[in-house]
Length: 226
Image 1 (cartoon, rainbow, N blue to C red):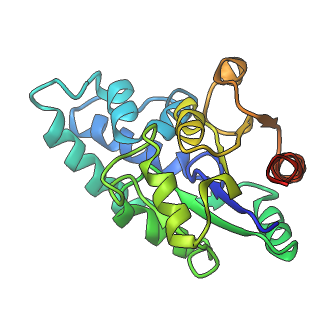
Image 2 (image 1 turned 120 degrees about the vertical axis):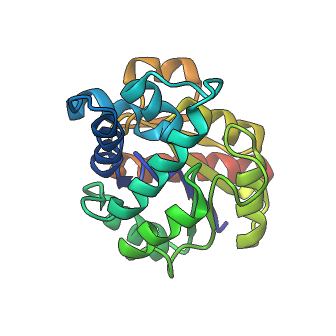
């Protein structure tokens, strides 16, 4: 049976951390602060402005100055977001394999859609993706299941015929809430030591491992509906 494999974007399909870290350090420069090491900012990449501003400037959403800094961060990021963004090694081959086996794939990210689409286009994925859903597309962001359910609907699939792949706990929470088998990856921006606590249906160390997990979970799903 044909499946739809949905992916988180940042830290799952694409390595966008270098440009996010650049924008974060621009916020520090604006405050007269020295740049932080890339290694300190990279783990925050999946958390977007919220995580990066917390580390870069010690700001949280409740801070009265947070929104102004968030908007500046987004503007700075938009101006540099395609400087270093690249697919993780093996991702292009993974997507081709999914397509060549008759399945479809799509993207569900918490990145705002106006930022996500230009990067997805830059990386050559836009025309091939069966659905592209940003954090503001469906009225809710992950861990709410609405973005995943919206993507399934847009691509013409029932949720039980979809799988969701991500590198953050909220990806797994959203996938489970949407009724989709989930795959957690270790090579992204999340903390590998925490992955067992997420209780994903499968764990992958590389894009090649994702395809193996997709095959196993698809076979199990097909048996359950037979």
